[in-house]
Amino acid sequence: QDLMQRGRTMGVELKTVGLRNSDDLPLRVDLRHDPDQTCRGKIVVCHGFKGFRRWGFFPWLGERLAAAGWMSAVLDFSMNGIGEDPLEFDRLDLFARNTYSRELLDLEQVVDFVRKQGPAQLPLGLVGHSRASVDVVVRAAEDPSIPAVVTWNGVGSPLRFTARQLEEWAQQGRLEFTNARTGQKMAMDFGFVTDVRR
Image 1 (cartoon, rainbow, N blue to C red):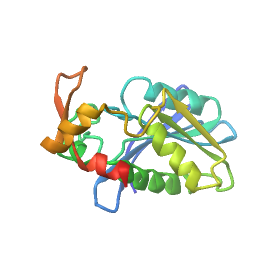
Image 2 (image 1 turned 90 degrees about the vertical axis):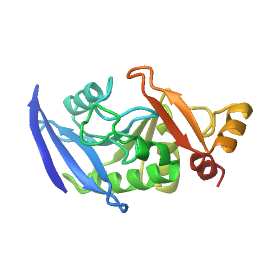
Image 3 (image 1 turned 90 degrees about the horizontal axis):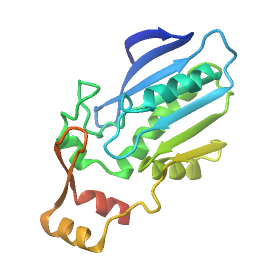
């Protein structure tokens, strides 16, 4: 682990930790807690499609959980498209190759890391926003020691695309999306569909 940043806001301490996954890709985690409170448990928060740990409400959520006595860990999946700049999609090559299987491996590594922080016996829960609802439900189903799962605006299906989109995707090998925030064209390889079906 590589401690990259330390900060402190309203009694909440922030450590940004850089892990490396099995593909030697960076796996970044914003770990927050309030050292003046007894820790109630640990919560790992996962972003959804076109999301990242520093986007939108995720920093606020991490702060609020920590201020309420939880250790919060908000992660960037390793292939979410975010590179060295924590606010920019500058690794669209990784974004294109991302799959649920890859995210589940990342999540398993982060869960193992967070369990080792502070008292080991504390309960650990998962929060998944949007597409990450699939990741947290599957992870909890595979690990009965996780007592709580929250999905926030979760998807109704892991493959929520129209038949026409899937046909185009199969023919072209990738499906393109426009990022409404940045205007960037972001593509996903058909390997995502193959992974879901498998």
